[in-house]
Length: 418
Image 1 (cartoon, rainbow, N blue to C red):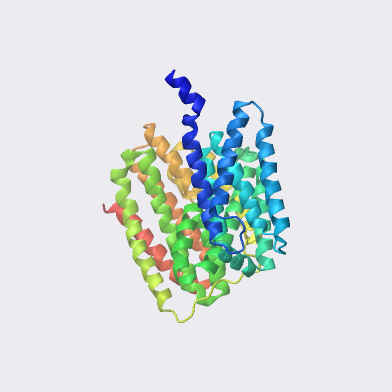
Image 2 (cartoon, rainbow, N blue to C red):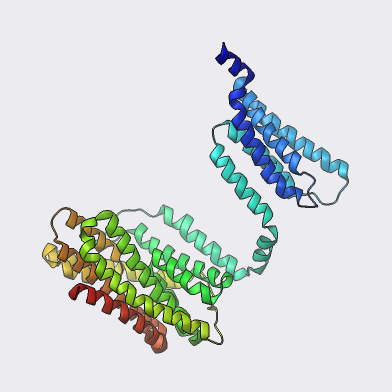
């Protein structure tokens, strides 16, 4: 009797209606502050609750058309309100927000409350930051928009259609993975350009170095070695970004080793920590130099997505992978260190993951695993320094050599002295 009474009165649906009310009040609160909006706090709250009510009745009566009818009714009332107001401003944003509010209310009844709340917060933020978004869009040049479109084509059109399979000698060529490197390099360049425009050069260096190292320190080195040569005033900025990106790789190796092969940490952690400490000292020194500089420049580029550079490095990546596969075929398991030396040129992660897996299987000792990882990292460091010398010139190479030298000395000190 009690349960039936509860179901008849629909009290069990109260949490959904409370959530709808909260969503409507959230979006309506922002609209209430806008003098040009004709709908405010109460209207948005009522529309959200109406969306949930329409969805409830649609479910109970097994008639999905009720939800659509409710949407049409809300749209009709909005149109009638604007027609009667005789105002030249159509208030399109508020209209769309009301329709979205109705839809979010319906989503809550269909067990999508979490998504509805997340979307409501996102919509409110989008409405609130109108001046900032308008100012940002007005600052974009045609070149910036072309770069974004180019990156979108590389990422969302070309990449998905490429086969994720191995081809060629030693099955070393993977079209999807190779093009992914092109996407990464182009994305790093585009993100770095945006970060420097928004954050500025002083705080942009640690930001760019950190995220660049998380994605690809080699690609980050390639991009900023080029900028460092084109603008000598950027030497300290480029050097800081490059060194910080390489330090982030050490942090990544620490995390990966701790997760996949905890037993290597007693020997591996001192080696990596020494390289991190030595390099961090130099990175902080370079950043202080940037702070004392009288003038710092944001890198100028004809294409923020660096399309030509990205494709060129993608081809180089394929060549190095083929050479690595050939060396691994010749050396076999007995040539672990040679494989680490060669494969570490462009990809530290591959040899690190392989070594940790062999350690877990008992095929490598702790000393062999740590040595292979250290060799791969130092090989990658040497390869990146070669990029700096060939692309960045002597001035940038001088600044980077101090940081890379400190990191290498720390790794070697940890490997042989600790």
